[in-house]
View 1 (cartoon, rainbow, N blue to C red):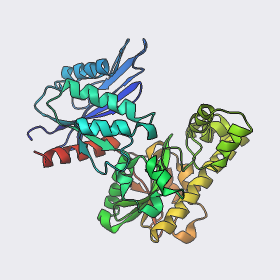
View 2 (cartoon, helix red, strand yellow):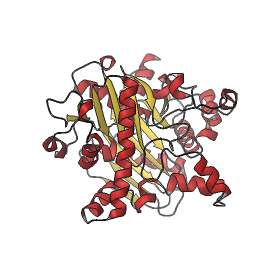
View 3 (tube, rainbow, N blue to C red):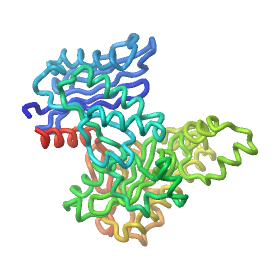
Length: 403
Protein backbone atom coordinates (compact mmCIF):
# COMPACT_ATOMS: atom_id res chain seq x y z
CA UNK A 1 0.00 0.00 0.00
CA UNK A 2 1.54 3.29 -1.12
CA UNK A 3 -1.25 5.76 -0.39
CA UNK A 4 -1.77 7.28 3.04
CA UNK A 5 -5.09 9.04 2.55
CA UNK A 6 -8.55 7.75 3.43
CA UNK A 7 -11.81 9.30 2.27
CA UNK A 8 -14.61 8.76 4.80
CA UNK A 9 -18.17 8.84 3.46
CA UNK A 10 -21.36 9.01 5.51
CA UNK A 11 -24.27 8.72 3.13
CA UNK A 12 -27.77 9.68 4.28
CA UNK A 13 -31.01 9.52 2.36
CA UNK A 14 -30.58 13.08 1.04
CA UNK A 15 -27.09 14.00 2.21
CA UNK A 16 -23.44 13.05 1.85
CA UNK A 17 -20.91 13.97 4.54
CA UNK A 18 -17.24 13.41 3.88
CA UNK A 19 -13.75 13.90 5.23
CA UNK A 20 -10.38 13.24 3.65
CA UNK A 21 -7.66 12.31 6.16
CA UNK A 22 -3.94 11.67 5.92
CA UNK A 23 -3.22 8.69 8.14
CA UNK A 24 0.46 9.52 8.58
CA UNK A 25 -0.56 12.01 11.25
CA UNK A 26 -4.39 11.66 11.27
CA UNK A 27 -4.69 15.18 9.89
CA UNK A 28 -7.75 16.38 8.01
CA UNK A 29 -7.10 17.52 4.47
CA UNK A 30 -10.69 18.43 3.56
CA UNK A 31 -14.24 18.03 4.79
CA UNK A 32 -17.69 18.88 3.61
CA UNK A 33 -21.38 18.17 3.24
CA UNK A 34 -23.77 17.84 0.34
CA UNK A 35 -27.34 18.28 1.52
CA UNK A 36 -30.82 18.21 0.02
CA UNK A 37 -29.71 15.80 -2.70
CA UNK A 38 -32.45 15.32 -5.28
CA UNK A 39 -33.89 18.82 -4.76
CA UNK A 40 -33.53 22.05 -6.70
CA UNK A 41 -32.07 23.68 -3.58
CA UNK A 42 -29.12 21.29 -3.10
CA UNK A 43 -26.04 22.74 -1.43
CA UNK A 44 -22.39 21.66 -1.24
CA UNK A 45 -20.17 23.10 1.46
CA UNK A 46 -16.48 22.22 1.15
CA UNK A 47 -13.62 23.16 3.48
CA UNK A 48 -10.02 22.64 2.30
CA UNK A 49 -8.30 22.24 5.65
CA UNK A 50 -4.85 21.29 4.37
CA UNK A 51 -4.44 24.50 2.40
CA UNK A 52 -5.94 26.60 5.17
CA UNK A 53 -8.40 27.94 2.64
CA UNK A 54 -11.84 29.33 3.21
CA UNK A 55 -14.93 27.19 2.94
CA UNK A 56 -16.60 27.14 -0.45
CA UNK A 57 -20.33 26.80 -1.01
CA UNK A 58 -22.23 25.92 -4.15
CA UNK A 59 -26.00 25.98 -4.56
CA UNK A 60 -27.99 24.31 -7.30
CA UNK A 61 -29.73 21.06 -8.16
CA UNK A 62 -27.78 17.85 -7.48
CA UNK A 63 -29.88 15.03 -8.87
CA UNK A 64 -28.58 12.03 -6.94
CA UNK A 65 -25.69 10.61 -4.90
CA UNK A 66 -23.70 9.88 -8.04
CA UNK A 67 -23.82 13.56 -8.97
CA UNK A 68 -23.06 14.51 -5.36
CA UNK A 69 -19.92 12.38 -5.17
CA UNK A 70 -18.74 13.65 -8.55
CA UNK A 71 -19.21 17.22 -7.29
CA UNK A 72 -17.19 16.36 -4.18
CA UNK A 73 -14.45 14.87 -6.37
CA UNK A 74 -14.30 18.11 -8.36
CA UNK A 75 -13.93 20.19 -5.21
CA UNK A 76 -11.17 17.93 -3.92
CA UNK A 77 -9.39 18.12 -7.28
CA UNK A 78 -9.40 21.93 -7.07
CA UNK A 79 -7.28 21.55 -3.93
CA UNK A 80 -4.94 18.99 -5.51
CA UNK A 81 -6.62 16.18 -3.57
CA UNK A 82 -8.44 14.42 -6.39
CA UNK A 83 -9.89 10.95 -6.02
CA UNK A 84 -7.62 9.75 -8.82
CA UNK A 85 -4.56 10.51 -6.71
CA UNK A 86 -2.22 7.56 -5.96
CA UNK A 87 -2.10 8.93 -2.40
CA UNK A 88 -5.68 7.76 -1.84
CA UNK A 89 -5.45 4.34 -0.17
CA UNK A 90 -9.11 3.55 0.46
CA UNK A 91 -12.63 4.82 0.99
CA UNK A 92 -14.26 4.08 4.34
CA UNK A 93 -18.06 3.97 4.56
CA UNK A 94 -20.16 4.36 7.66
CA UNK A 95 -22.83 1.65 7.69
CA UNK A 96 -25.37 1.84 10.48
CA UNK A 97 -26.50 -1.78 10.83
CA UNK A 98 -24.24 -4.79 10.46
CA UNK A 99 -26.31 -7.23 12.49
CA UNK A 100 -24.36 -10.08 14.07
CA UNK A 101 -22.68 -10.98 10.79
CA UNK A 102 -20.28 -8.01 10.72
CA UNK A 103 -18.22 -7.78 13.89
CA UNK A 104 -15.34 -5.74 12.48
CA UNK A 105 -14.53 -3.46 9.52
CA UNK A 106 -14.95 -5.34 6.26
CA UNK A 107 -13.65 -4.91 2.72
CA UNK A 108 -16.71 -4.42 0.51
CA UNK A 109 -17.54 -6.89 -2.24
CA UNK A 110 -20.79 -8.10 -3.78
CA UNK A 111 -21.41 -10.57 -0.95
CA UNK A 112 -21.01 -7.83 1.67
CA UNK A 113 -23.45 -5.62 -0.21
CA UNK A 114 -25.95 -8.48 -0.36
CA UNK A 115 -25.75 -9.00 3.40
CA UNK A 116 -26.20 -5.28 4.12
CA UNK A 117 -29.28 -5.43 1.90
CA UNK A 118 -30.62 -8.37 3.91
CA UNK A 119 -30.39 -6.20 7.01
CA UNK A 120 -32.60 -3.44 5.58
CA UNK A 121 -35.73 -4.68 7.45
CA UNK A 122 -34.04 -3.90 10.78
CA UNK A 123 -32.56 -0.59 9.53
CA UNK A 124 -34.99 0.71 6.88
CA UNK A 125 -34.04 4.37 7.36
CA UNK A 126 -30.26 3.94 7.27
CA UNK A 127 -28.92 0.92 5.39
CA UNK A 128 -30.49 1.84 2.02
CA UNK A 129 -28.83 5.28 2.14
CA UNK A 130 -25.51 3.73 3.20
CA UNK A 131 -25.74 1.30 0.28
CA UNK A 132 -26.36 4.15 -2.13
CA UNK A 133 -23.11 5.77 -1.06
CA UNK A 134 -21.23 2.49 -1.38
CA UNK A 135 -22.51 1.76 -4.87
CA UNK A 136 -21.80 5.30 -6.01
CA UNK A 137 -18.23 5.25 -4.72
CA UNK A 138 -17.51 1.80 -6.14
CA UNK A 139 -18.72 2.92 -9.56
CA UNK A 140 -16.47 5.98 -9.41
CA UNK A 141 -13.38 4.12 -8.17
CA UNK A 142 -13.89 0.37 -8.79
CA UNK A 143 -10.14 -0.21 -8.45
CA UNK A 144 -9.90 1.21 -4.94
CA UNK A 145 -10.37 -0.80 -1.71
CA UNK A 146 -13.60 0.23 -0.02
CA UNK A 147 -14.34 -0.65 3.58
CA UNK A 148 -17.59 -0.77 5.56
CA UNK A 149 -17.32 0.27 9.21
CA UNK A 150 -20.46 -0.68 11.12
CA UNK A 151 -22.11 1.26 13.96
CA UNK A 152 -23.15 -2.04 15.51
CA UNK A 153 -19.77 -3.82 15.38
CA UNK A 154 -18.37 -2.50 18.67
CA UNK A 155 -21.39 -3.86 20.52
CA UNK A 156 -21.17 -7.43 19.19
CA UNK A 157 -19.01 -8.29 22.23
CA UNK A 158 -22.05 -8.03 24.49
CA UNK A 159 -22.83 -11.30 26.29
CA UNK A 160 -26.05 -13.03 25.35
CA UNK A 161 -27.50 -12.08 28.74
CA UNK A 162 -27.29 -8.43 27.68
CA UNK A 163 -28.07 -8.84 23.97
CA UNK A 164 -31.12 -11.10 24.20
CA UNK A 165 -34.67 -9.93 24.80
CA UNK A 166 -36.81 -12.17 27.01
CA UNK A 167 -39.01 -13.48 24.19
CA UNK A 168 -39.28 -16.85 22.45
CA UNK A 169 -35.76 -17.33 21.00
CA UNK A 170 -37.12 -19.15 17.95
CA UNK A 171 -39.19 -16.11 17.00
CA UNK A 172 -36.34 -13.77 17.89
CA UNK A 173 -33.84 -15.65 15.74
CA UNK A 174 -36.22 -15.96 12.83
CA UNK A 175 -36.69 -12.19 12.70
CA UNK A 176 -33.20 -11.17 13.90
CA UNK A 177 -34.61 -9.59 17.04
CA UNK A 178 -31.93 -8.78 19.59
CA UNK A 179 -30.14 -5.77 21.02
CA UNK A 180 -27.56 -4.55 18.51
CA UNK A 181 -26.68 -1.06 19.76
CA UNK A 182 -25.54 1.89 17.69
CA UNK A 183 -23.05 4.80 17.74
CA UNK A 184 -20.43 2.06 17.99
CA UNK A 185 -17.61 3.98 16.30
CA UNK A 186 -18.12 6.80 18.80
CA UNK A 187 -18.21 4.48 21.81
CA UNK A 188 -15.08 2.69 20.60
CA UNK A 189 -13.16 5.93 20.03
CA UNK A 190 -14.25 7.61 23.26
CA UNK A 191 -13.63 4.60 25.50
CA UNK A 192 -10.12 4.27 24.10
CA UNK A 193 -9.45 8.03 24.31
CA UNK A 194 -10.68 8.04 27.92
CA UNK A 195 -8.21 5.32 28.85
CA UNK A 196 -5.45 7.40 27.23
CA UNK A 197 -6.60 10.45 29.19
CA UNK A 198 -6.23 8.42 32.41
CA UNK A 199 -2.77 7.26 31.33
CA UNK A 200 -3.86 3.62 31.14
CA UNK A 201 -4.29 0.92 28.53
CA UNK A 202 -7.88 0.33 27.34
CA UNK A 203 -7.79 -3.25 28.66
CA UNK A 204 -7.15 -1.90 32.16
CA UNK A 205 -10.08 0.53 32.27
CA UNK A 206 -13.84 0.28 32.83
CA UNK A 207 -15.72 3.19 31.29
CA UNK A 208 -19.33 4.31 31.05
CA UNK A 209 -19.61 6.24 27.78
CA UNK A 210 -22.51 8.68 27.34
CA UNK A 211 -22.93 9.72 23.70
CA UNK A 212 -25.40 12.60 24.00
CA UNK A 213 -26.41 14.23 20.74
CA UNK A 214 -29.82 14.48 19.09
CA UNK A 215 -29.53 10.70 19.16
CA UNK A 216 -28.23 9.48 22.51
CA UNK A 217 -26.84 6.22 23.81
CA UNK A 218 -24.89 4.83 26.75
CA UNK A 219 -22.46 1.93 26.89
CA UNK A 220 -20.68 -0.06 29.56
CA UNK A 221 -17.15 -0.84 28.38
CA UNK A 222 -15.06 -3.33 30.36
CA UNK A 223 -11.40 -3.53 29.40
CA UNK A 224 -12.03 -2.10 25.94
CA UNK A 225 -15.00 -4.38 25.15
CA UNK A 226 -18.64 -3.37 25.20
CA UNK A 227 -20.69 -5.45 27.66
CA UNK A 228 -23.94 -3.48 27.49
CA UNK A 229 -25.47 -0.58 25.58
CA UNK A 230 -28.74 1.31 25.73
CA UNK A 231 -29.96 1.17 22.12
CA UNK A 232 -31.46 -2.10 20.98
CA UNK A 233 -32.90 -3.61 17.82
CA UNK A 234 -33.20 -0.02 16.57
CA UNK A 235 -31.90 3.35 17.82
CA UNK A 236 -35.24 3.97 19.56
CA UNK A 237 -34.46 2.19 22.82
CA UNK A 238 -32.66 3.70 25.78
CA UNK A 239 -32.05 7.31 26.75
CA UNK A 240 -34.40 10.23 26.15
CA UNK A 241 -33.24 11.81 22.87
CA UNK A 242 -33.94 14.86 20.79
CA UNK A 243 -37.01 13.44 19.06
CA UNK A 244 -37.04 9.77 20.19
CA UNK A 245 -38.79 8.52 23.29
CA UNK A 246 -36.17 6.02 24.41
CA UNK A 247 -37.36 3.32 26.83
CA UNK A 248 -41.11 2.80 26.76
CA UNK A 249 -43.55 0.17 28.01
CA UNK A 250 -44.29 -1.86 24.85
CA UNK A 251 -47.97 -1.90 25.82
CA UNK A 252 -48.12 1.84 25.05
CA UNK A 253 -47.99 0.82 21.37
CA UNK A 254 -50.90 -1.60 21.78
CA UNK A 255 -52.86 1.07 23.67
CA UNK A 256 -52.29 3.73 21.02
CA UNK A 257 -53.38 1.29 18.30
CA UNK A 258 -56.41 -0.17 20.07
CA UNK A 259 -57.67 2.80 22.03
CA UNK A 260 -56.10 5.72 20.21
CA UNK A 261 -56.90 4.35 16.77
CA UNK A 262 -53.41 5.16 15.50
CA UNK A 263 -51.80 3.21 12.68
CA UNK A 264 -48.39 1.58 13.02
CA UNK A 265 -46.87 4.27 10.80
CA UNK A 266 -48.38 7.01 12.95
CA UNK A 267 -47.03 5.41 16.12
CA UNK A 268 -43.62 4.99 14.50
CA UNK A 269 -43.57 8.69 13.61
CA UNK A 270 -44.71 9.66 17.10
CA UNK A 271 -42.02 7.69 18.91
CA UNK A 272 -39.13 8.45 16.52
CA UNK A 273 -39.83 12.00 15.37
CA UNK A 274 -42.26 13.65 17.78
CA UNK A 275 -41.16 12.39 21.18
CA UNK A 276 -38.12 12.89 23.41
CA UNK A 277 -37.26 16.49 24.29
CA UNK A 278 -39.17 17.77 21.28
CA UNK A 279 -42.32 15.91 22.25
CA UNK A 280 -42.09 17.06 25.86
CA UNK A 281 -41.49 20.76 25.32
CA UNK A 282 -41.37 21.54 21.60
CA UNK A 283 -37.58 21.96 21.44
CA UNK A 284 -34.83 19.41 20.87
CA UNK A 285 -31.93 21.87 21.18
CA UNK A 286 -30.50 21.69 24.70
CA UNK A 287 -29.26 25.28 24.47
CA UNK A 288 -32.77 26.52 23.80
CA UNK A 289 -34.19 24.34 26.57
CA UNK A 290 -31.70 25.75 29.07
CA UNK A 291 -32.57 29.30 27.97
CA UNK A 292 -36.25 28.59 28.51
CA UNK A 293 -35.53 27.08 31.93
CA UNK A 294 -33.67 30.25 32.93
CA UNK A 295 -36.79 32.21 31.96
CA UNK A 296 -38.98 30.02 34.19
CA UNK A 297 -40.51 27.76 31.54
CA UNK A 298 -42.02 24.78 33.38
CA UNK A 299 -42.38 22.52 30.31
CA UNK A 300 -38.70 22.95 29.48
CA UNK A 301 -37.72 22.30 33.11
CA UNK A 302 -39.75 19.08 33.20
CA UNK A 303 -38.26 17.91 29.90
CA UNK A 304 -34.75 18.52 31.28
CA UNK A 305 -35.56 16.65 34.49
CA UNK A 306 -36.95 13.65 32.59
CA UNK A 307 -33.86 13.63 30.35
CA UNK A 308 -31.50 13.71 33.33
CA UNK A 309 -33.49 11.16 35.34
CA UNK A 310 -33.17 8.59 32.53
CA UNK A 311 -29.48 9.41 32.14
CA UNK A 312 -28.83 8.94 35.84
CA UNK A 313 -30.66 5.59 35.81
CA UNK A 314 -28.34 4.30 33.09
CA UNK A 315 -25.24 5.50 34.90
CA UNK A 316 -26.35 3.57 37.97
CA UNK A 317 -27.32 0.50 35.96
CA UNK A 318 -24.02 0.36 34.11
CA UNK A 319 -22.10 0.96 37.30
CA UNK A 320 -23.78 -2.19 38.60
CA UNK A 321 -23.02 -4.09 35.37
CA UNK A 322 -19.33 -3.17 35.48
CA UNK A 323 -18.86 -3.56 39.24
CA UNK A 324 -16.01 -1.05 39.28
CA UNK A 325 -15.82 2.09 37.18
CA UNK A 326 -12.75 4.15 36.36
CA UNK A 327 -14.47 6.92 34.41
CA UNK A 328 -17.74 8.27 33.09
CA UNK A 329 -17.13 9.95 29.73
CA UNK A 330 -19.49 12.50 28.18
CA UNK A 331 -19.32 13.03 24.42
CA UNK A 332 -21.18 14.35 21.33
CA UNK A 333 -22.97 17.70 21.04
CA UNK A 334 -24.81 17.79 24.37
CA UNK A 335 -22.28 15.71 26.26
CA UNK A 336 -19.38 17.91 25.21
CA UNK A 337 -21.04 21.31 25.52
CA UNK A 338 -23.86 21.21 28.09
CA UNK A 339 -22.21 21.63 31.50
CA UNK A 340 -25.61 21.65 33.32
CA UNK A 341 -26.38 18.18 31.92
CA UNK A 342 -23.10 16.76 33.21
CA UNK A 343 -23.57 18.37 36.61
CA UNK A 344 -27.16 17.18 36.97
CA UNK A 345 -26.39 13.66 35.72
CA UNK A 346 -23.92 12.92 38.54
CA UNK A 347 -25.57 15.03 41.27
CA UNK A 348 -26.44 12.79 44.23
CA UNK A 349 -24.07 10.03 43.10
CA UNK A 350 -21.24 11.06 45.42
CA UNK A 351 -21.46 7.74 47.26
CA UNK A 352 -20.49 6.10 43.95
CA UNK A 353 -17.42 8.32 43.74
CA UNK A 354 -18.94 10.64 41.13
CA UNK A 355 -18.81 14.43 41.22
CA UNK A 356 -17.92 17.38 39.02
CA UNK A 357 -15.79 20.36 39.91
CA UNK A 358 -17.92 23.44 39.05
CA UNK A 359 -14.95 25.40 37.74
CA UNK A 360 -13.59 22.61 35.56
CA UNK A 361 -17.04 21.66 34.35
CA UNK A 362 -17.75 25.20 33.17
CA UNK A 363 -14.65 25.37 30.96
CA UNK A 364 -15.26 24.69 27.29
CA UNK A 365 -12.69 23.19 24.96
CA UNK A 366 -12.09 20.77 22.13
CA UNK A 367 -9.59 18.56 23.94
CA UNK A 368 -10.29 15.59 26.26
CA UNK A 369 -10.37 16.78 29.86
CA UNK A 370 -11.26 15.74 33.39
CA UNK A 371 -14.04 17.77 35.00
CA UNK A 372 -14.20 15.93 38.33
CA UNK A 373 -12.27 17.01 41.46
CA UNK A 374 -8.82 15.51 42.02
CA UNK A 375 -10.25 13.72 45.06
CA UNK A 376 -13.01 11.94 43.11
CA UNK A 377 -12.82 8.15 43.11
CA UNK A 378 -14.22 7.97 39.57
CA UNK A 379 -13.09 10.38 36.87
CA UNK A 380 -15.78 12.36 35.05
CA UNK A 381 -14.42 13.21 31.62
CA UNK A 382 -15.42 15.21 28.58
CA UNK A 383 -14.02 13.48 25.50
CA UNK A 384 -14.88 14.95 22.09
CA UNK A 385 -15.81 12.13 19.76
CA UNK A 386 -14.27 11.67 16.33
CA UNK A 387 -16.22 9.08 14.40
CA UNK A 388 -14.62 10.03 11.08
CA UNK A 389 -11.13 9.47 12.47
CA UNK A 390 -12.24 6.15 13.95
CA UNK A 391 -13.65 5.04 10.58
CA UNK A 392 -10.49 6.17 8.79
CA UNK A 393 -8.25 4.44 11.33
CA UNK A 394 -10.13 1.15 11.06
CA UNK A 395 -10.24 1.39 7.26
CA UNK A 396 -6.53 2.12 6.91
CA UNK A 397 -5.55 -0.64 9.32
CA UNK A 398 -7.62 -3.19 7.42
CA UNK A 399 -6.38 -2.15 3.99
CA UNK A 400 -2.79 -2.22 5.22
CA UNK A 401 -3.32 -5.69 6.64
CA UNK A 402 -4.67 -6.95 3.32
CA UNK A 403 -1.85 -5.59 1.14
